[in-house]
Length: 316
Image (tube, rainbow, N blue to C red; front, side, top):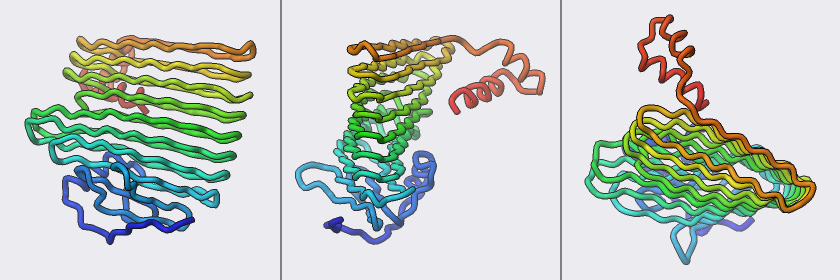
């Protein structure tokens, strides 16, 4: 593999950045191995590993991540933290060679104390070779007492090669005022996709998640599971679409808990374009089970504590 054009020494991170990183990188961010930390629109520290090479783009903000087929059970961390107001747009492309086994930990955390909007738009594309095992973990989170909107708009495009497995785990649990997530995925022959999406909104927050999965290859398969909780006056829309273009299997499941005055729309869509395409969808929206609340109350919890336990268990 070629060498990165730019390396930086380890940098000292302020407490706010460290605290946000602990939330968005559940694997533990360290300035070692393959990593790239983007802070307020700038790459502040970066490193390569033997099998993973990160190169700064020259034509637009972002990086190219090249993962060798020799990578086995390796990790690359590419978090984003925004502690200043403004809009940050970044384009990251992943080139994953045949046979690679890698976990990619991304995500964005916003610490907002101002009165203007803080927004991050991350556009990620994954070009996955044959016989790969790729796990992509993306956590979104916002905090701070500022009145400015905290906005995250991720776009993810994934092209999964023959006999490869791609696992996508996305989580947004707290603080994000508005999000519009766009996912587009193509599966080749014998490719497998596993998606788990977890989302909680509160107050006046608004979240939209669109996902198009094209099962192009023979014996390709997809399992898509969405779990969400809507509280306050928040609004959610989840629109997954599975398109079977060959002999394939897909299962779409959307489960939601609705509370207070929230609104939740779950719109699973299945589209069979081949006689041997087998696609199933399920959707359920409901309030917290009263029997569960009563049972937890018998252990000495108040209603708020009991609800928190149920929600935490539901979103695990």
